[in-house]
Image 1 (cartoon, rainbow, N blue to C red):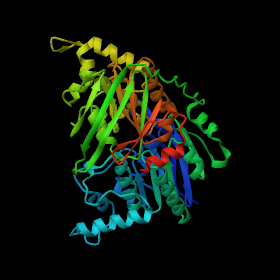
Image 2: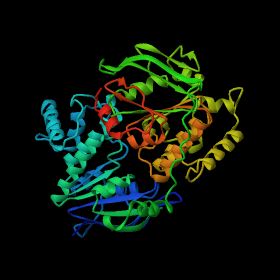
Image 3: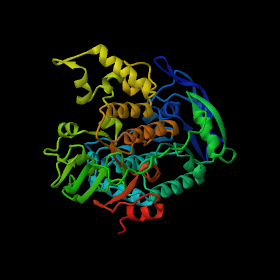
Image 4: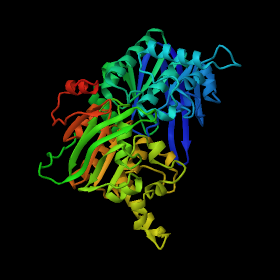
Length: 501
């Protein structure tokens, strides 16, 4: 039985058809995966179903009856809950308070923080997801903890339909298994689960049917057993991308580009986040740092790019110690970075594509004369970057928020690599990207490594770390393991991620 349907749904943003006459059915008692490249229209369709966007044309039906959702609250009242790819949490509130916003309270007039905290912990225990302390403010949580909170909030409020947009991007393998067990339980309760992901193995593991979209249209809908992973990839992108041609490991005699020695720092609560972290990265080397989010990755990233001064320890670039830990000093030393959250830290969403490509002191200085920007030269630079990195946009003046997630990430990567850095620090660079976009970002990183740039790859995705790295260490509870040279047994890495010595 079709619980939720769309008929002829269209949505246009400027000159771009994000959705072009989509017809689709979602059944009760089914896990339905939706695949497609970044910009294929998946998230736009889900936002229509969740009441975030109103369609320009077409109809949404619940139980065969046409509905028009004027807001997400109206969609939730109809039993539709959604976990967004980009977080919708309120940073100034605690974990318990954010959960309480999505769950009806016993009293509409009085909020009981203790009761909310206890209810949050009970829900987390029942679902099997690791919850941060209920009284912790959200702005102090790492990316993975925020993702888990989003999932908990949606599950608490979901009635008959649960939409998950890239929910596993920063979860551990154990947490992913817990989540899939929960989705199967929801399916057994005759709920409809809609699951957006770029990980084809997850689709074959948990989904009953799969729909593949391309450029705002449905390409195919089929039972999961009727399509191989290769066929899915071909439907998504037109052809199956070739595997990475990974360069040979750099010679041991190569110059050390980055050296961290006995770095030690604390998190916002005063708890040790990094304990005597030491490593070196040579020119042309990709040094992978794997680990479960929340084990010091955020603090290490901030130290390396000058956003945080360590309590003790030193950082040197090309043998020269970093005297001050500021972004300006890091840039001057030749350190560029791809941040973990492209919306919060990588882009100015209200500004144009061109303006975002110029948001770097190193880049701006190339086109400044006596404090004035040389607009024609800057625009030629931006146009060249857009073409070179195949950034799909309506034009250089289009707001960067109008781009798909993959194209937004390409803007960040292109801007940082245009600085011709000596060291690149990158965190989860392909998170939430489709096969093509993820491959393009990874290839760009490997290309600058081939030209001598030292790469520090901090990632919660084991496949990404093992695919790109020349050496791999694991960061667990603020301590860095001895480096391993691929091929590395994923089981051994999993034990190290869990804190095993």
